[in-house]
Length: 263
Image (cartoon, rainbow, N blue to C red; front, side, top):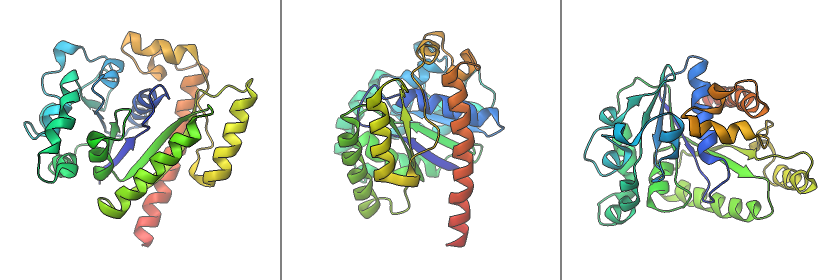
């Protein structure tokens, strides 16, 4: 059974795309078949996986508005077992087009319903907003992964996002779960980082991943080379953190699946 995970934060610059790309790569590296759906009009996940603008013929925009099937948009990357449905700037117009559609919140879910069973995981990189595109992703997902930058305003944004997820559970997707919150851009030299971590862990407890992603120059460099960080420099601290995070995600997946069977 394919598991669908959305990587979501309405705030930009928190490591959302970096987390989506590197988590997907790590899952592929341990033998999982993975599809990344780039739902951000900036197309950074597509760029980070080495897909040029000229290669983006069938895109997530066309999938979202029902022009092409997901299988048509999916294309291979340089990473074995990892495919991507790329994004272009056309996706920025989808918010307006979706408004007039029937069942507008379910467009992506219906597209995923018809997908071939060739992937173990679908990882959705959402735009930095809580508009209709992100709502489509949440409505279609089994669980949500939330990257959270260690800064003062992060908690306020997190509270708003959690309220949105709760509304999605109540009205559109009762089965969606919070997979976990991952602390990004972690700087152990900064006392504020430690304070934010303590506040988040006190607020959400076990929903916060033990693994934290440090600030790391090599992570920032990797997208310009069209590679995930764990391919660009596996030995750097940021890449090692994402490998560790992938192991923790798989362990949580086993818990989720066991809980589902028990239910």
